[in-house]
Length: 524
Image (tube, rainbow, N blue to C red; front, side, top):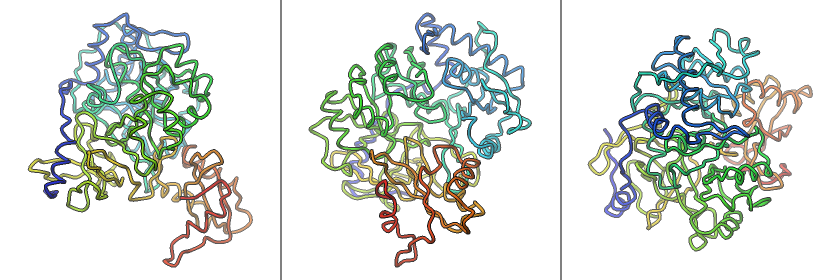
């Protein structure tokens, strides 16, 4: 086993920020944790959706009914079940039902291209799908057992017990090889995320907005942060986010905690900041912040209410947090801290086999019970993102995030970009190389380049440059082709057709030269 070494200063600061151990229920699975709450608070409101109020008793009974239906269809402990259901009480009951079978849920969007969905099935081995839109699924996913989330409620909880190291769910993230990476998450990792949370007050009076798509890892916090404490999960009522509806939902249901991706946070602060006035904690992150919007928000809402959060899917949603106040806000976003590791999480800044002292840039590595057990596909696992080291005399399993960062003298961590071409747009992790892989597969494209640009409002978006083989290759044809292989959020919003791609003196694509071509703003 390799060792990470460092000088006295580096060791001291890492020891200080990593004193995060606190007790949490790591002896039970999410099934048992939820059933304990449901038995203790049967009449408390578990879910709010439009004009529907669902108690813990009714949610538990609905989940038991779905679990019974799944067991009759052959779902056994350890099985993966694909879930493709719109945001609704039926969605929450279904993922609970899967866990009550001892299985793990695989949330998807059934509008994803069939090729991507088939990759999900191949990596997870799932044989069952629960969906509220069963028509047309069989043609794209033959051989899959399809169920709806409607089953008679059952009073008694299943006798099966889940263990903290069992898998709870699988998230799909963008992969550099042209296919998504399947990231499994254990029950104990969910418990580590939401119990004794340092980044927000979570308890029986918590009312957390469930806004993220269920296949986005922020939904893990939104759902279980409420339901494992006896709080209320407030389901945003529409598929599309509208500022007026967001404001109405937050106010009418007394939401106390909300997570907003950076882009959405900026929009709310710019166009309707009053929507967040009554919310106790606003968590935001997922991409580079705008200091103008952060200053405006912190000045309006007060110190500590806006919390900058950071964390890759592989570490179960959040890994660091930083409550913001005006006195601590730097002038440049390049100096904005992502904070310190949250409870039961450890962070190391590493350069080669050395722990970095404050001020020295290295790779951000994470450890603790939030870590995924590793990618499901052996090809992804072989890339070495998960590794073991001896650090300060202790054996640690690390996830190498690929993010660059540095420690400040006070122990706060500052994010400094990526080591590769991975980006985040609207909170979704995108490998530019995955988009380029499929763009280059188009028979009419000779060469291509994918980058990130900005529109007139300063919002990030994917930009593509393509050199066609002949005049028959059009932007619409390329867009339609990508739509067969990639989900909508990974399709470039702008595609420029060029006679050639400019090259730098080193023979690489000259990104700076492309800046002048893209009217919407800079390309990075």
